[in-house]
Length: 159
Image (cartoon, rainbow, N blue to C red; front, top):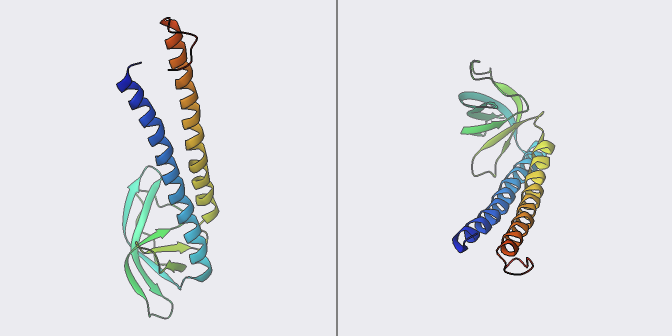
């Protein structure tokens, strides 16, 4: 394996680790934010105005209005345990949601939002990514050592 190929392989292995840790931290942060919001965020009603659909269903965006009417936020993302299908109409207003008032992007959570699942996904990404990278690194080192030995350069010290 040439020098440029080695640099590319090791760079990709490193980037895999960094990327999966970042994704994991995003999920963990989102889950913990949801937990905190469900405990302390202002309660109100979410009215869906738009949906963005992907493979896992549709994400809703709309308006949050607090129960006492003092907070009205537009462009709020809804985190809900139930996904809306792409062909389905927008749901009626959803009551008993809580607003994350500290979020850069306003987010409302329904009472059945599974913050635990978001944390578990995050930890999975943050752990499995680096473990996969280590496995790839070990496999790459073994391959390099065999290739080095096969070319008569010694006993496979991986240089």
